[in-house]
Length: 336
Image (cartoon, rainbow, N blue to C red; front, side, top):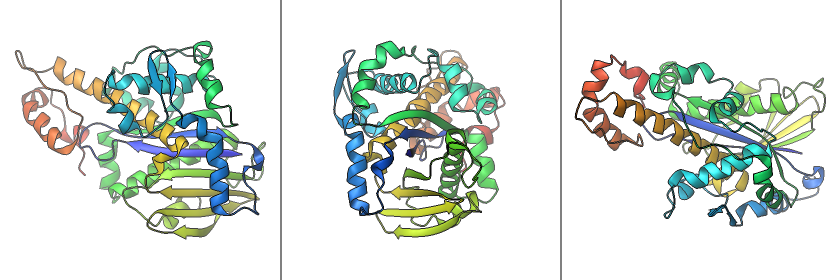
């Protein structure tokens, strides 16, 4: 059975990209049982992912799959070190032997290669070298011992320029996040088993589960789901303050999709959160390095994480640099 989990990093900031990441997992086919209640099914699924929530010591780091913000803010180590280690193991787990960032990024961000070259401040993305499958095998064995297997990581990276273009078409931020997330899910479905709703897709599994963190407080997703999958029939399972659940059916295939408050407490969503946060931080490191390199002689331009108050501070300090480089604000600063 295919399970897809999605989360984002960078929804709130004013500077830097919005990154949405998805992870695709294979679980035993008997996880879904029509005779089980929703709660019983959730418990069965959670059992398969329990090893990811248990701390594991590896290379002087404590690895645990949790909310990326908690991991990034942990003290006692380089903030990116644990995120990099988790991402590095996952890359090997998916069977990717590439040890450098840019070739891997081309594989997981297929829609964004040109966009990431366009703003000069996102061209020079850098990271530590990734580990080999051999070096990662002990962690992989531990994480998959209950039957869950990671098969793919994918991402959509929305630059400030692209963000503003979408907003200008009449979207609000919540619409933008929902549309970006669901299109990423559709891409993963296409790559994993063919277009959803296409009966001719070979190897397609009859049931797919999708888990998302709730999008900006939004509670109702029926309309946007029908927009992405117009040929599928939609059934509302639940729409509550805590969770919204839908079932889409087409050509003998069913997809259940959930949007849950604090959804990143579920390890697969947390894993997607870690990838999104890691890539967002890599982008912000390149962003800050670019503007520090081009700042006025004698000026020390303090880095920014891009959140509104500090973004305004940064834009004030970098005003001369931005003007000198003739940077269009619509390419740099989000409108919302």
